[in-house]
Image 1 (cartoon, rainbow, N blue to C red):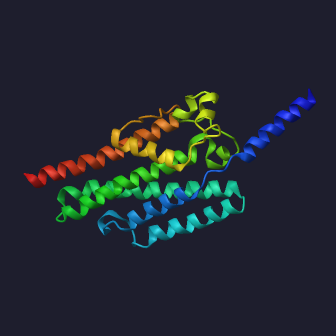
Image 2 (cartoon, one colour):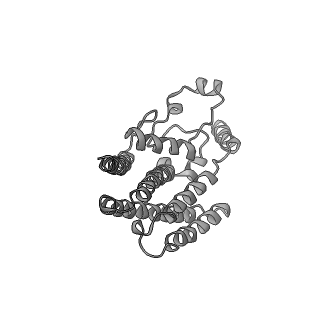
Image 3 (cartoon, rainbow, N blue to C red):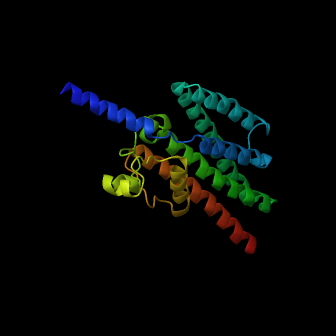
Length: 229
């Protein structure tokens, strides 16, 4: 019995070792892209000096990246959450300022372009949240060979082990691109498409993301109709 248990543990550890951890660079690129889009907004849609927000973001992102590479995963998680909070705060502030400014703006073309930038930022920010929170986050997902439990029901999670092996996906686990796809669908269809959400926190996040997206699109449409008339 003990020998069988040891063999089971060894097999599980071997499977985990054979599984490649998901790359972190797509999330870093998304973070920098969201920060760049914010920095490119006109002054009426930002608070404080233009350099302040990118500086705070970089100051948090650098220790997040370094702590991951040195194996300080708890510290990496803390800085990761701080980065997401800063990006979310910047997005919400800019959307509120857009709602206030756009109807009476004398430069509609610039603000319409800014609204489109905020719509893209909305996708990136919530993709980072889904990626950071689902199944304990990327570090916890890396500890498991394969992905069978989480807040989001990806199609691969409903496939049998035989089907996964035949597809060469026996150790499949979601990475940032999967969460980016989910966030994109939420902002365009205002609902999940191929991946239903199971957890209440994920449903709440999707509701907020859909609301922000709908608000931005409604403002764009209203301003376009007003310009034509």
